Image 1 (cartoon, rainbow, N blue to C red):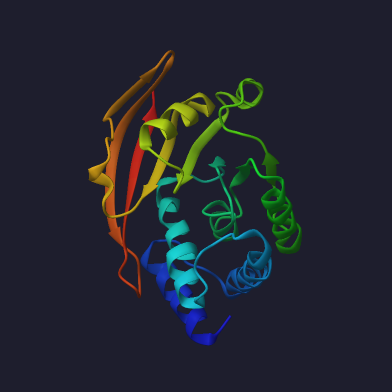
Image 2 (image 1 turned 60 degrees about the horizontal axis):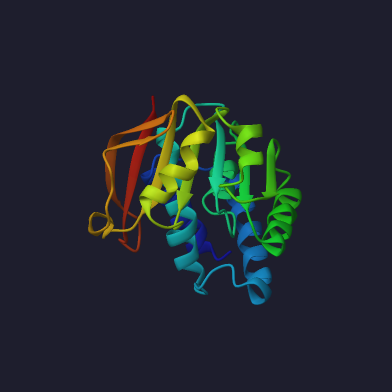
Length: 219
């Protein structure tokens, strides 16, 4: 990772409330290296500019962290390239993390990154969020479910709600045009009720891209 990218990552992480150590920045550099290497085969990201990846992927992935308590058990739905889960875990080693991804080759990439970065209490699982078997195993156990670029909000709420414990948070990561899509303030699906507690609109450091976090709570 170039020195300018390291500087922007370090300063930007402070801006979003998730400061990094030099060792953690080294981990991001290794993640970037693997992402670039595997991207040639798996199409993990459409971005090929290092600074854009640092800001639009890494710093964007850190924005939910201020809303998640210490030691939280987190599910990243449709993790793909490990975003936002891997950056969150690098920054907050206290988190327990499940990366849910349906495509086997991307799961292989995620497990490779987990091994290289020596991320404890982190697993990548080949599974779909709608799996009743997986819901029966993990239902009601999660402190937070995170979904980034995963589709319509109502679909995310329906898939994520069963995994949350009472009081758990579901955070939907959206772009600047989030209001053009239907976003229910309250969501009821059988025994699972979510209430929208907050809408956080923010600007990413350095490049100024707009992002939105829709934060729901179960109960």
